[in-house]
Length: 262
Image (cartoon, rainbow, N blue to C red):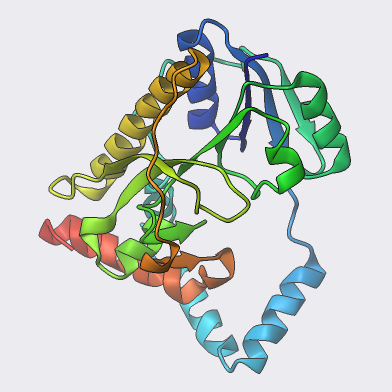
């Protein structure tokens, strides 16, 4: 079998999947989505209680208000996922399937039947070992410059820290850790460009490289990779993506756009 592509819903992701399907000679057998899980009221209450116990409730509330008052907030947060467009399409060219849980036994059984040569990941939940072992090879496009910035909001924290030399993306093999697999390729951002253009170009160039790597793997090439030094960087979880952190990122991006540097 060919490729199983695991991703999230989105126009840029759809355009990329279709480009991948075309460039690999209709090599994508299935696109898998994990059903979006709405944040329930109970979850919001638990988050509020955690913030209250940590003494940050009112601080988080204040930064939440400030974020809503900043007209740039929505656009700036979207910068991190935007990509120069591949050819757009009204739908997905490969077959698609939505599952409740990407790591469920049901999903594992589906992948076991397909026995893909390659699983490619772009966004979504961390894959666990039973799913990983259903394919010959599994690769991920991580929107962060590994090993220095790992996790779901890696480039965001590089911006928050004003660490411009380590804004970038990483393509790596998938292991049982989070963004810790051997690195196949990294693309560093051109920070001389305005942030919106920079991220759009960064994500586009990385996705083009992702397609090239997929073609090489499918052709049977042994694509080399370099081991990561997991101790060389930091991991950032979504729980750290607080209102205060978001406000800091938005403020830094706006300052960058105004002054031409971060």
